[in-house]
Picture 1 (cartoon, one colour):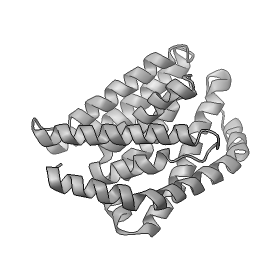
Picture 2 (cartoon, one colour):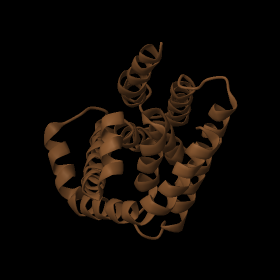
Picture 3 (cartoon, helix red, strand yellow):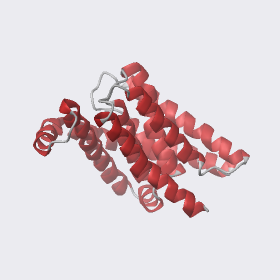
Picture 4 (cartoon, helix red, strand yellow):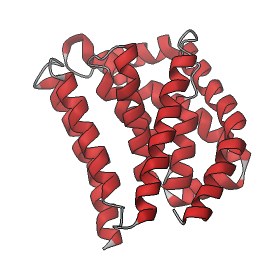
Length: 229
């Protein structure tokens, strides 16, 4: 049963959500971005709930994840004046490391959706939700999360990877937002123009991961042991 639920989660994240975003760009021409963002949120929550059991520890786990999402949102607010230099990815990755891929995707997607209430909702929101969610999803895969907890070298490499993959995914929206379809030449040009942002974001990920992994990680580890989360 657990493997069955895991595969459902993978299908939701890697198939259903990208299809919803694609439909938003090509069918609705981005006019229904709030509807699409809400649909992604619902699917992310469903994916998370599939891992829950009907007991008190599951409720506590959800509360802790909600707190982590709140921290992520506040962190984005605090560093609003520094474009590309944000702690969002670091907290999302840490959430995934300790609570799994489902929690990582939920933390990433909801952090984007909630914080954009302040920064501004738009057709870019679903892409941000998927990009941060996908970064959390990958970090929460058991083999990868184990490596991230074992060594700061792996953590550093993942921070750099997250900065690159976020920029590459968002550049897809940049290209498709122009006339509704994907153009390889424009995509390559967009990547070239975004390289400074990519570099700043990747470096900031590493910095925030190094600064937060110990204090937040230790507290999460204690909570998991104390409340059997």
